[in-house]
Amino acid sequence: MAGSSAVPAARTTARLLTFLAAQPGPVPAGAIAHGIGVPRSTVYHLLSVLRDEGFVRHFPDERRYGLGLSALGLGSAYTRQAPLTRLAAPVVARLVETAGENGHLAVLNGREVLYLVEQRAAGRPPLVTDVDVHLPSHLTASGRAVLALLPPAQVRALYPTPGSFTDLTEAGPRTLRELRTVLREARARGFAVEDGEVTAGFASVAAAVVDHTGRPVAGLAVTFRSDSYDDAGRVWLADQATRAAREVSRRLGAR
Image 1 (cartoon, rainbow, N blue to C red):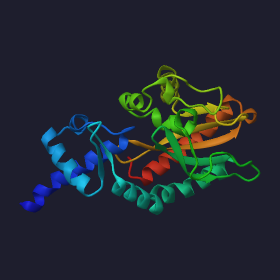
Image 2: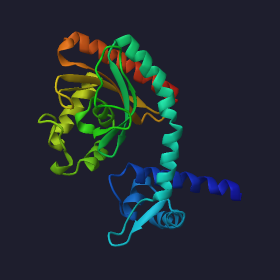
Image 3: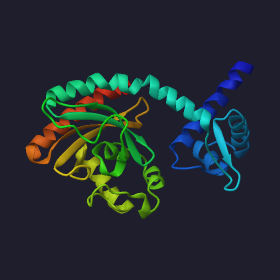
Image 4: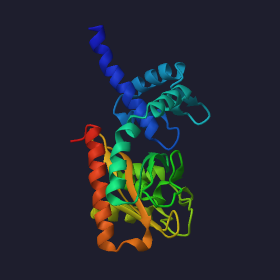
């Protein structure tokens, strides 16, 4: 009985940590209880244990909770093992060979994307999207592919004010309303695009990678010179990126 009763607690703990990881900053205990659907008393008990173990940090002045250093250690270990990178790298390599253009895979990290895989095609110039580089997600095709599949409330939480939008160029959405328009177009189109918003003269198309729950976990993109392809050519590249994203999703257990 003791063993079986511990399973729901473990599941709730995992949901609590996952909820905290998805927030743009520390949140009140009440928001956590509402977000994961458990009584506030249970949340306080779990937070107390997790705080003692270093997985949660309490900000008493704000009465809020965020992830602690122990959680960061787990994240670093996960990055070192890099299962997503291992699963995606050969797929990106085949995409680059087929498309003849640079390919890359990035994950959402707050309001930025973090590039995990970068594969350069023969004869193509290097890009700013190298491994471990961070870029504003709302400017990149990879980031937009992921944001387009997130719940609207989560997108709003990531971009609560106009100051949330930082630009590398003069282009790109500058308000939540403009971003929502970009994401709505990506959903309708079936893939995300950007043209000159990261690097002048270059464009990208991207599709989302999803896990076994259907949650978007990464964006897989192809980048090319803006003047190299007409609309039909861009759709063809997007189709190649979408096929590759589906393959990585399948490797992650998606149906």
